[in-house]
Picture 1 (cartoon, rainbow, N blue to C red):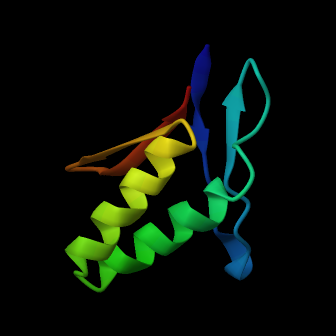
Picture 2: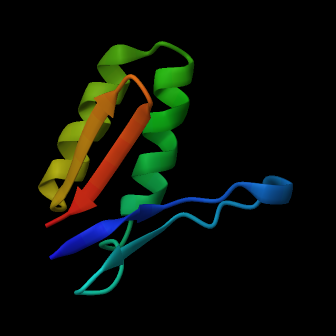
Length: 74
């Protein structure tokens, strides 16, 4: 059961974490999420799509919306 995702970026720190009943993101998923955010900021859509697929392979679902990107781990 996924309760949600929370991220903070104060003082240049990346404290992204997932609040799930099962614990934390799979190994490597946080880095892939960061890389995908950078790719989207640079409008590198093919790279962002490849990273979305890699995240899906790890069990992380990514949804882009008008208020930004959200994700959940399955």
